[in-house]
Image 1: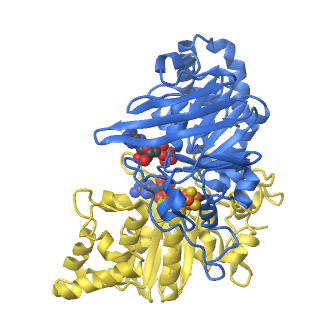
Image 2 (image 1 turned 30 degrees about the vertical axis):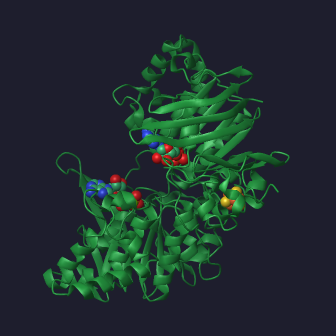
Image 3 (image 1 turned 60 degrees about the vertical axis):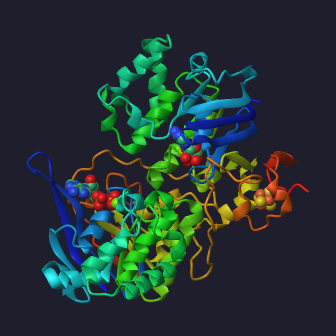
Length: 317
Length: 312
Ligand SMILES: Nc1ncnc2c1ncn2[C@@H]1O[C@H](COP(=O)(O)OP(=O)(O)O)[C@@H](O)[C@H]1O
Ligand SMILES: Nc1ncnc2c1ncn2[C@@H]1O[C@H](COP(=O)(O)OP(=O)(O)O)[C@@H](O)[C@H]1O
Ligand code: SF4
Ligand SMILES: [Mg+2]
Ligand SMILES: [Mg+2]
């Protein structure tokens, strides 16, 4: 097991109280696994990714354990996490490239980052150049400023940068979302290539776009309103999902070949609950077409078949 | 309904407007009565520029846009107002169309002041109610609320409801569902499809190919301001001819099929202005030749209602 998370609870501290963005998350990711993390905006995907590597205010660690390759991660302590960040666990945050200092050339940026971790830029440069080749970037990007790169070039650059020290786990948060389809495909396939070459051992690929995950992920985890809803292998998740939310979500996606005139799709009525004061019991209850009495209690996230986990009362009786 | 004839738009950029940027190049197509046409292309291909020209928000550099046979660039004052009574646009980010300090339904009162200054309160309220119901909103639940109290899907439907107050005939929908979550996207798509069945014509602008197929009768593929392929949606999606369209279709992440190994030529950083085929630099077709580099291929009808701009 590469990553193991047990009963992780992380909230946001706000003036009106806790936003319960991540409640009781338990899951594991195997060596070599690319796990897709999907769900509607606001369900807690970014919060889960950030919790594992930079849990900073207003985020607040409530409880839970995280182990990476058998070693406990002190996620509640930002300075102790420094030892792991970038070396053992790395993240490509949402909107990563826009956060880089625009006045420093990319090569210099990398060299500063490396020396802050006591690595030598000159020594690593040959490997850096091989990785640039791998993502089809010319070496002269190192002498460019971040703004000179197109969206797709930026994402490939951050991919190289964040995996330079061969971390065990890479978290990629919406890195294909703002790209055009052809660039999106190229970047997504590069993620797989980085795993295949064992540059990183396992990955969490966060996106709201399930069809991308169908292309590249080994397993998919769907979240709903701060809770885990279902996790299974990619094929099971797409073809035979069991959680009512996952079923509705997947059937609402427009597919090439499906037209309104021939087959009308439907959305999921209702809105996601506010996480400041989430409903008791199953958080999907008031939108769920099969909800019953028992759903006023919280459904546990349990394994109903090998490697198929689900939090729903209807499916676990 | 709407007809574009050899429409071009050249922006002047640079410090003194010294650089010319051809954003739309010699584009001709039409949207017929009660038809949905998708305008598809990657970012920067000129989709919004076409939408804005149709809405008279920017001038046309050359060519003509006709609405029911009338050249829209000749419209002034009363006629222009009448045009907006028939033609409206909705844009990508629903939140940016609202002022957060006013209630969301203020967008309706603006329409009232502008187009219906003499209408009675009771009559107006009825009109607003029926228009909200037409877009699947419950007036009691959504009126009198601030924008942040409504979801993205609700705000987007509000904008469609506003357009319906005017009894419009033509709607420019520019990426209106890109920002929405999967579970509400399809509701807005269904709404557009229902409006179409009641006679509304729609130009559906999107960079997301999986959305274009669901509601559109015809599709137009734009690359760097030029139409490379257009026609019957089914033909464009299942029988694409232009190398660019083929590459696009092979890149769409689908839920029924895994990606095949196709070579994707990553987008060039800044393309040069060219006399030849706009796709020349990125084209991987084995039939690519010298002529492609110097002379732009014309749009040719390769089968009924299927046009392609490529020497093949
Ligand atoms: N800084 C913050 N302060 C308070 N609440 C936040 C903050 N950031 C995110 N949230 C809330 O936490 C929840 C999960 O957000 P996020 O993890 O960003 O979702 P996702 O990435 O799935 O879209 C949302 O309800 C969001 O409103
Ligand atoms: N007001 C403007 N001034 C100068 N260039 C512009 C302006 N608006 C758009 N452009 C340029 O025109 C091209 C087409 O833009 P746009 O129509 O917005 O494309 P799309 O909607 O397909 O993404 C782009 O290269 C863009 O940078
Ligand atoms: S636990 Fe109940 S409400 Fe929740 S998804 Fe299952 S059936 Fe629906
Ligand atoms: Mg996020
Ligand atoms: Mg646009």
